[in-house]
Image 1 (spheres, rainbow, N blue to C red):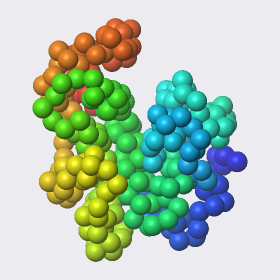
Image 2: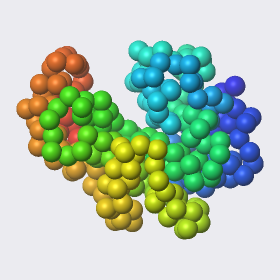
Image 3: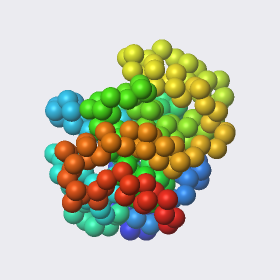
Amino acid sequence: MWDSETNFDYLDIVSGKKKKLIHDVCEEFRIPSIGVALLFDRFDYKRYPEKSIWRRNLGHHLNIEFKDGCNLKNPKIFEKLTYSKAFSHLIWLSRRAWAEKDIDFVWNLSHELRHLEQDIENRFLSLAGNFLLHNLLAVEIEEPKLCNTVPTELDAELAAWRTSLKILNYQDVKSYINKPRKSVNEEEDFRILSEYDPEDFYDVQESLILFLRKYQAEWDERIQYVYGSSSMLKNIDNICKELTKST
């Protein structure tokens, strides 16, 4: 199933039109020539537990070389990919993230490809971003406890917006940004996003460091409680030092 000659695996279910969109989107990102699997799933995994990332999320970027996701209950296809050792990164989109409207397809793929770029630029962008995303609810902060409060998530959404504007009809993208959302949190996330211009430079590294430093004591306590000092994160001083290193 996994073709070592290419980064792409369509599972024979992506239409010719969507294959063209995939290549148009990928041209906007710095993707390694080998080692990346793009997986467009047939399923939404509705029978998985509600908190499972495979059921809850539209998509993921996982660095499988560093064993992201290895401690979870995963679909068989993910396990097969991991055990093959043919790829170091996975971009996965659930069926509902890609199978219907082109704007959903382009937006969600672009979002995950930006996470891939972040991880390649500096592994600690991924580690710190995921730490914040999973611990926002446990710490008292002034900002809304929403995805786009996390700089790496906002950065990925800005990349998705920017890419969609390049590839799709402007009015379709505008309608997507302004359409009513299914939940209050989604509405607020898009309100936060709309305060930015996708064409302006967003310094995700600096924004992440500022957010980590602002609540350093609280984040340090959370690291010790959840992960322990033996984790790669160690503490906020260590994370910020790693974030300033260039790759």
